[in-house]
Image 1 (cartoon, helix red, strand yellow):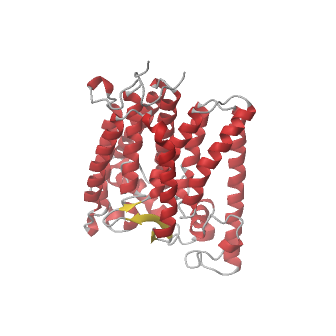
Image 2 (tube, one colour):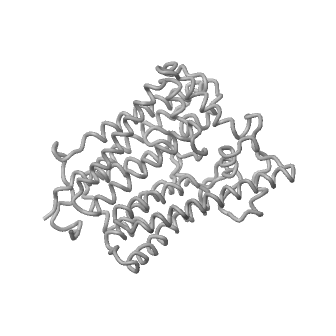
Image 3 (cartoon, rainbow, N blue to C red):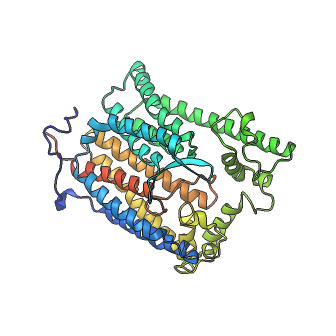
Length: 410
């Protein structure tokens, strides 16, 4: 089906009418946001932190952003995707030049009372530019497919490269699954995905080999994994993998090598497992969890990366299942809206957003229970973070727009 121009044949904005709104995702998002505010408060109760108030402000602004994007025909973004992409690249370059450095990374632009993280809006820009390229391209013959893949490699590779320079591995690793899912619904050849699987296995093997080589280097030179970070980097074949990131991988695949006593690199993982395991069926009660309150689960991460551990300890299995159920509604509803879309663009946007959220949810919860290495990927609408909350609201607003304008074709 040919795609009509976003500014022709259809109104640019449609006001709210009951039959045009999908209500499932907004209610689930509201529930998740309430969990986030309550448990950010609980995680910081012992130090009387005020991040829960800031989270409320972020959510309020995010709600306005969600509503505004929902009212705009999603096809409008097709015409401005290249401008948004260019702005994304400029901000990613700007953060490397004038960005605020924290914890050994330069990921934020200081705007006074608010810090802006360009890698979060880069996710939106990459999703839209990929959709724009796919909607304007033919995928059929090998030659056509190779041309499209070349364009996508350049379009996605540049922001990923700039994000890795910050370094921000967690934001970079969520983009490939999004692009692959959009290629899949574009009906690219199965042989391509078999090749990608082979490349992933090869890359995983190379990273694992490099990490073990790193461990041997540190042992042979009697260097500390925690104090001598950066010592191995000049000797590595993987220049964009930093020693603290190798520590995280090594903590997962060979913890006995890096932290035999469990008091350094393994500390966060072990305390998270204790938090989740001690919650039982009903939990210890809101604000009654000992891991976060007493600081065993580090206060620097309890309200963001490990917020699910706080929920599991204080609300138990039932609270954890409730959170998973709310995420399930958002994710399955995203797939449903993708199936209802009347054009490829709507399908691509809804699938891309849904897979992005799926990666965030799976990796965050899996790392809190020791199933994957600790990456620092936040939990949508629950983890503390202004740029992340706003990007989540914007992305879900796009999905709502796909639903609202699904019938506006001539």
